[in-house]
Image 1 (tube, rainbow, N blue to C red):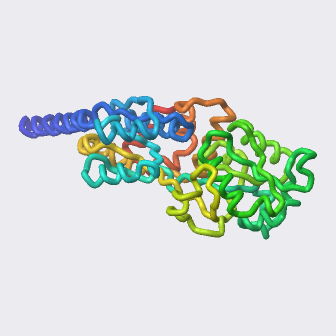
Image 2 (image 1 turned 90 degrees about the horizontal axis):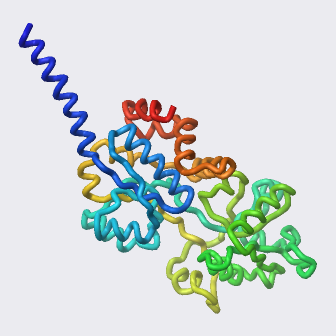
Image 3 (image 1 turned 180 degrees about the horizontal axis):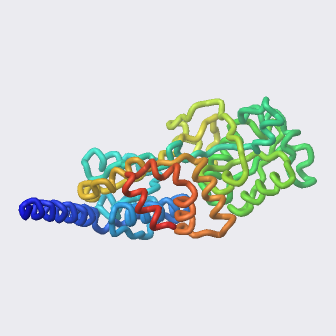
Length: 335
């Protein structure tokens, strides 16, 4: 009996030690908190799940795409970039992954970042023949431009000054022959101006045509339909002209899917254990992110508040990313 009791105590002790060792292996984890809403809320979700569910000492550190990913390549820190838009640094990152310095844990936005020209869903349903940019540009009468000076003209709402999408939209406006078809570009002036033009159209159930992207709070609040470009993305042409200021001879082109990954350092992956399994499972579609961002905007919520709201209200989604044991711990932490 004494031997049995001693064996039991030893087994329990070893189990307890294994739990401590697991937490110690995960240890301190630095998570890049990027400076836009979708990345901020995902970083906070990761901090809560890694801390409460997997015993990591997870902390957020300020980040932005280029400096964060460059630091991960050169210094192996921070440990995790939850929402890394990798297209602009793809060559550098692919080389680092091939060398084993970094790892793509998961495609955090499962359908990627999306850019293009959009129309309201109610307008698309009322005008089912308008499915592409060419379809829309054939009907300037359906998209009246504001202002007496634009009487009879159609409108394409452009990006604010200084944004890369402004250059692209201006070139596509020319490539698709929009001016010759009776359209003008409407300068929105700022992100707030662009958002405001969409909100105004929805309040009045009026037509709207212009540039936007996902995931965003606006597309979570207002249902929009992205128009078909009629062509595939041509990277060579994109680099030659589509993305170049004042290109004299742009041709029709389409935005590529922006690949958005969770990137982790090799030193973190080696010690993370089940915590890495969580990051490799964790992915969500734009529709889920849009809805969460809309809630955050309406409630002026921080990234942490948005993360807690998501974890409380969307157990059916995030519990698929974690082990049952971790799920119970997270639920208790956010109650």
